Each structure stands twice: as C-alpha cells, then as structure tokens.
Amino acid sequence: MKTVNHWIGGKTVEGASGNWGPVTDPATGAVTTQVALASVEEVDTAVAAAQAAYETWGTSSLAQRTSILFRYRALLDAHRDDIAALITAEHGKVHSDALGEVARGLEIVELACGITTQLKGELSTQVSSRVDVSSIRQSLGVVAGITPFNFPAMVPMWMFPLAIACGNTFVLKPSEKDPSAANLLAELASEAGLPDGVLNVVHGDKVAVDALLAHPDVTAISFVGSTPIARYIHTTASANHKRVQALGGAKNHMLVLPDADLDAAADAAVSAAYGSAGERCMAISAVVAVSSIADELVQKIRERAEKIKIGPGNDPESEMGPLITAAHRDKVASYVTGAAAQGAEVVLDGTGHTVDGFEDGHWIGLSLLDRVSTDSDAYRDEIFGPVLCVLRAETYEEGVALINASPFGNGTAIFTRDGGAARRFQLEIQAGMVGVNVPIPVPVGYHSFGGWKDSLFGDHHIYGNDGVHFYTRGKVVTTRWPDPSDAPTGVDLGFPRNH
Image 1 (cartoon, rainbow, N blue to C red):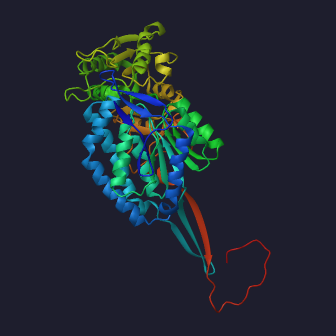
Image 2 (cartoon, rainbow, N blue to C red):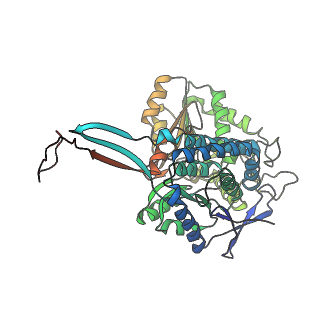
Image 3 (cartoon, rainbow, N blue to C red):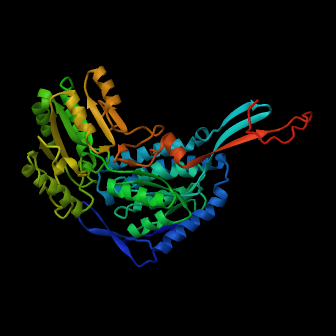
C-alpha cells in the first residue's frame, strides 16, 4: 500500500504520530493509500521549519523569488498529466477535468511570477517642506492554508504561490482524502529551487487544523471549505489574533429569463450542475426559471442529462466520475430520496446507479428535481453532488428576491438576451461573483475569487489583488532630510502641521 508522509523542511518526513488515514480510489472503493495524520508536535515541527526559513526568505529579493517561480511554472506545466493523474486516482474526477483544475491553478502561479508589479509602493514627494511620504507592503511571516478535497491542486495553488511571492513561508494542510497532489506540488517547488522550509505540507485531521489555528507563530490562515467549518476557522483563528480568509459553502443560482436561448441555458445548466459530479463550490445547484419557459427548460435539461456517460475518471469516454467517499454518496442520495416527500417532482433519480465492472465504486447518477420549494432540505442545504433543483418564479423581480433570500452568496448567473435586465441583475444580486450568460463565473487569476454572506468569513477574497493584500501588511514611512542651510527650528509641542 502506498504511504503519503509529510513534506517538511524540503524533505519527506515520516509520520510519527502512529495515526493513519485511509485514501480510497472512488472508482473501485478500494483503499489504495494510507496518509499520515499529524500530531500537534508534528505541526509544531512544520511551523518551526517555516519560521526558520522566513529569516532569509522574508528578506530575499523579488528577483530571486520570481526566478524560482518562473522555473516552478515550467515544471508544473511539464507535469500537468502527472498531477492530474493523482487527482483522478484519489478524487475520482475525469482526467480532462483534473487537467482543467491544474490549468486554473497555473494562472495564479503566473500571477505570482509578476509579483513585482503587485508589490510596488507609492511615493508622495514634498508633502511638506522637504518631507516625503511612502507606502510599502511587507510580508507577514509564517502563513497557513487549509484546503478541501474537491480541488486538491488548484485551491492550494490559489494560496501558496502568492504567499511565498510576497515573502512569506507557508504550511499547507490539504484534505486527507486526496493528499498526494499536494506533496507533488511541494516536491516540484523544491526542484525549482525554493529554499527548504519555505513550503511545507503537513497532513492530518482536526488535530492538525486546531494546532495551526492556535499556533502563535502562524500569522494568517487561508481556508476553503463548507460554511460551518469556515465559520469555525474564522472564529477560532481570529480569537488567536490571526488574519483570516475563510471561504465557505454555496448554493449557486442560475436565473433564466423568458427571452433566453433555452438550448444554451440547458447546456450551461447541465455542464455547471453535473461537472466534477457536482463537487464544486461554484456548481450551479439551483435553476430559477421565470414565467412560462420552465417546462420546456426542464425537458431540455433532462434530455441532456440522460446522455451523460458516467464511469472511472481515467476512462477517456467518461464525462462524470464517482463521488469522493461512499458516505458522501449516501448523503447526496438521501436528498433525492427525500425530495418527493417535501413536495418536489423527481424528474431524474440518479440514486442506485452502478458502473459495470466497478460495482464497489462510489457511484451516483444525475438527479433533477423540479418544483422545489425554498423550505425543502434539497434547496436549503449545500448538497455538493450531482443534484440540480429547479424553482419557478413569475417575474424577474420574484426570481431576484428568491436568490437574495438565500443565506449563501458565492456565485450566481443570469441567462438572457436583455442587456438592461443583465445590468440590473449584476447590480441588484447579492453575491460575490456574477455571470451573464456564463454559468460558472470563476474570475481569472488577476481578479479575486470570493462570495458574500455565509460564503465568506473575513475581509479578503482569495488571489488577485485581495490575495496580495491578505498576504502583506502596509507600512507608511515619512522622511525628512533637512537642507544643510536650514536654521534650527527649536522645540514645538504643537500638533505637527504640513507647510
């Protein structure tokens, strides 16, 4: 059986706690790997390695950092397939989807390569007689990232490339469900020349998470995961005087107006709802159909969903793979089986789906629920699986009010040919990311990713300008160099004035 250990101080460190977690191939249900689960002492070792590395990395030149990041980008590009294969083997998503994940992570590495422009300061000269004022941004120290199972390569790359480019050192605690990709990312960074201890990977469960949240040498925590855990991360880390960005769950809506291209809307709904088996925080999980188009739209979605081929992620013909664990598969299925009792019409029931030759895999088919009520479990909860709910509204205003009433505010989309309605929507909707005829509005790397309401805890979104600001802190320097001919000014206890 394969063993995944920690990566600390530039080398593999065997787990010493004696605790191990199972890693399963979701397509077969077989345990293929064991991963070390860190003790508090092992987390301390990782933080100490990062703290020691910060003594030199924090004062390293931008030229040194960016040259390493450019080499790192080249290595990641050369190993795309290797990273994607690890993701497929442990997460279950199809290989093309895993490759897409790696590509989106690379966008942030590329952003980090250009950190020289992001860290430029400001200078105001002669604000007073012979006085200049400058603003600069400096690194924080040791920062940590806690990342989810659904994007084991992309989400870590949303964090650590920018953090280390800004001069910080990093401790990554990836999901213990699919840990191998994180280790490969760290090994490639070392191969690119990243000094030992700048990037560390410590595997574990709640013990490791709590140790990072409480550690006095960790200055900031980045997190992506469910809303309850995001709230816990934010509360606990803030109480320990840390800067926190904690991205939570979602219930992303797609509003379809009567004038929309229904074929395009149906294509988008199926792609956005069922891609990666719905295990995406930006998945469309609720379609709001306005006025008379609902029946036709539901039929078009059904026709497309019924044709999706489900199978192992390493099969080139597969369009959707299994769910991450059997327990998660059963939880997702429970929302479908309980939907009818709560008033929904089950148009497609994906529970009980199996794949020939892989009967023990964590399979579930595509489910489509129509006429879903806003007080049902399938609507209120983040299902995180291939279940699409359809709700109906009589008007644009009713649809917007329905979406804005949701406690989540991660992403949303509108499908329409009406530019005026689209403009109203992007201004009136209460969500952090908005798509106009774009079902999954994940921003490019040089903008920032993040939601509103219960989808974000903290003041900063992730990557982009917000990411740079999160991993740095501002300093303002006021300088006066008197001219040799200046006469002494004497003591003045009055409040300083510019003149």
